[in-house]
Amino acid sequence: MPLLSSDTYTTDYIYALPQGRRAELIDGRIYDMAPPNLLHQELVSELIYLIRDHIRKHGGSCRALAAPLAVFLNADDKNYVEPDISVICDKDRLDEKGCHGAPDWIIEIVSPSTQQMDYGIKLFKYRTAGVREYWIVNPATQTVNVFDFEHEKMTCQYGFDDEIRSCIFHDLIIRFADLTE
Image 1 (spheres, one colour):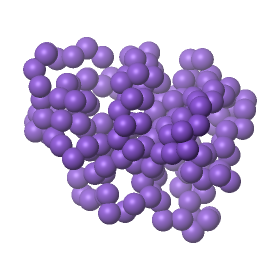
Image 2 (cartoon, helix red, strand yellow):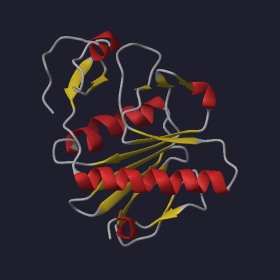
Image 3 (cartoon, rainbow, N blue to C red):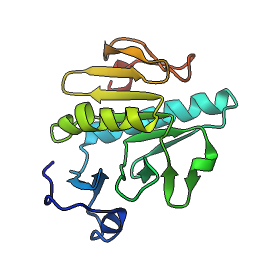
Image 4 (cartoon, helix red, strand yellow):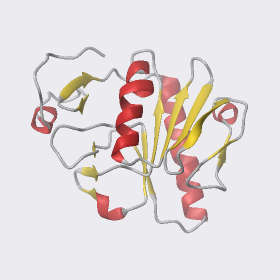
């Protein structure tokens, strides 16, 4: 994900991008986004279905939304991301433009071009912005890293065959092998 230049950008630049071109803005730096592959899209679809179904069955008020959802992590015009999945429990953070502030739970599906972003820059940014839970799903290695920022628990790494319990929805368990069959 090469930077366009060393200049500092704002969300105005993001909104001026040509139709179909996607990028994220972190601390004023632009990061181009490659289109997702089929497995990526299937995982996002399955996860959204499972999370929404769980929320509905338990009478929850959180919303699970897939990219491209604009997430303005900070109260500034220098940070704009599009997580693969965002779960937002405070409806006051949502408006017609997207989510203002940190989602409660973010899931990123890793691709070869996003590894550095997902495991490095976004990990730091999401934690400092106030995301409660962050999952990094890596289809190539069939691993899922779960970060429980809310309780400051150590990272757990799981395989696709493991049952993974959500930190914020304690009774939601996901097994990725069931999603990729």
